[in-house]
Image (cartoon, rainbow, N blue to C red; front, top):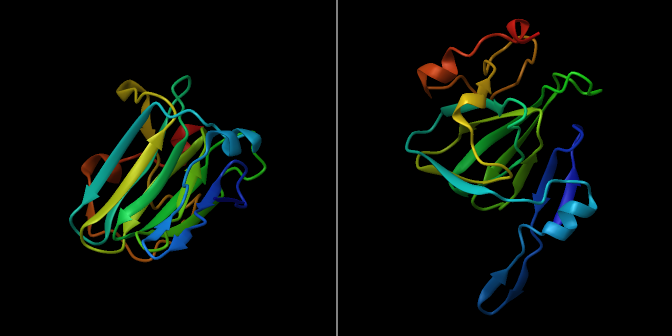
Length: 178
């Protein structure tokens, strides 16, 4: 497993290193020791899946308020998604910058999203499923979000969403978070 640092502190792309033979391959996709050595959260309190039947479905941009902030390790197990992390840490040198990666069942990459960053994705295929490893128990009262198309962030999405929840569509602009 290779941990590739992105331009955002604490945001990593996790790349498996398959060991292949006549049966196929085996690859580690998470290692608590390797994550801890890089200063990353290694605890997993919950695992969740998100299934999206339609292409161009947008989920996000979600995060948890303190003291319930969480780290997410997100991978696509079926289909493909344009996965995005946004730095919302006021003291960060990359505040309001974003990082995106295409996660697919074929490339088997994962995105590590640390506390203080919002996360969201746009499905690129019908029948897309993502798996989340989450560091802390989800607290509904701490759930928060920012608008997917907030001009202060300026995410370059592949296209506008065709499917988005009313909740996600009505998240406030960042100006109201300050």
